[in-house]
Image 1 (tube, helix red, strand yellow):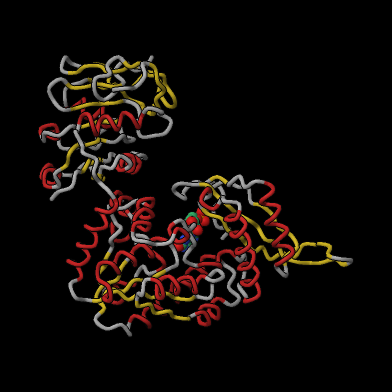
Image 2: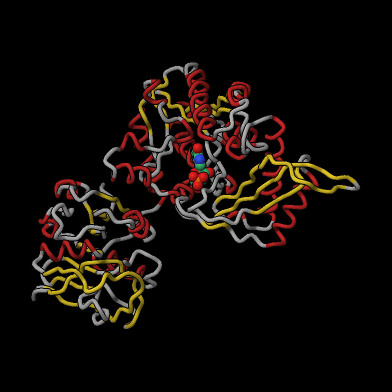
Length: 512
Ligand code: XMP
């Protein structure tokens, strides 16, 4: 059975992934393809509709990307967005020219036809434009559905081919009725059923894993984070005892992290879990190391040692499970170098080659929010499913400078109070990542009658969807106040707490 799928042909748009997500939000599965995708491939995937994305090129540039011109003969509706509209219109005989001025930003759309694509969209609505070229002359095969002051053919329909085009971007939130337009395309035009659900995905993924691994054993490295937890839960459902999980205690974990993993996976799920205490090796290799990239290298290499040594003990292990997600796949596909770009997940990158494992990547078609839904469906607790990300090198990159047991103790305790208070205020799910950093400079304080010279804890919390750009979270002052006074009172060695109010870029999320 092929599942209802919308193909997105990505012409290099910054919004390619976003279109895919918007489609999936309508319970319709979507996949992103490069312009070189063949009609046979699209046909064999049984696509229900096609969206041609925007892109930075101009259709008359020498190497402007094009899709197969026969795409309109596949018999499925095609929606062209921005460059996608221009390239499709050009194939269908329209004239494209540079706009008088590059149009970028919000524009007022005047809707003149609300039959299908623009059904229920108000006569006047705001849309987001970002283009240099535009269609400036259409032949009689096209009908106009909407215009703006500077763009006479802002939305069009072809009379005989199943083609629609919009010059603006319906996928971004700056186009308030964009979601309606995409829904109209999916439901009115492509006649989608919209029956894609995470539980069906789970069932398909379970069957695919069973088929892939047969009776062999799969090793899964647990990091304590959501992706590897969901992979483990899914594999456990699929292959039960053929799954062996490895958790490396690197000595750089947060309070109770190892215990939490043991309780959940070994006690609750009854998964065969190997915990490797490699903390002494990590900490001795890290002693005196100040440079963050050096820290990362040491931790990566040591992780491989720990993992290798433990995995050798596991008989019949042929596969290694990884929590690769769809954005990694799209990104590496776009760069044309899938293998090299796959996320070095939980520092297990390099392991499959070194140990001769084949990869099992059951999440490679999912976006992060879908992984969380899958986690909930598989019965992982809310705490785990909605966990903020934690970097592979752990607290090593949250202690500025060299790492000692004492400093680890300080940052662990500060982190625990911070997260406690954020959770108690009901704010944990509001923020994308919240963390404490130990800044080991001694500043002056007073405690009782005496002066103190102690360290600074910096609080960092960010709001972001992609972790590439981020704003600092607006934690209420009262909550910041409680966090500060508890850390200063309860954590020995700290007499000052500061709040990081930088955005990314130019600052990064972690301090190292
Ligand atoms: P930055 O600090 O680059 O962080 O703004 C972006 C996201 O990546 C995480 N991060 C890491 N994750 N290994 C990881 O597995 C690393 O070396 C690493 N450095 C940063 C960071 O926590 C944030 O979520």
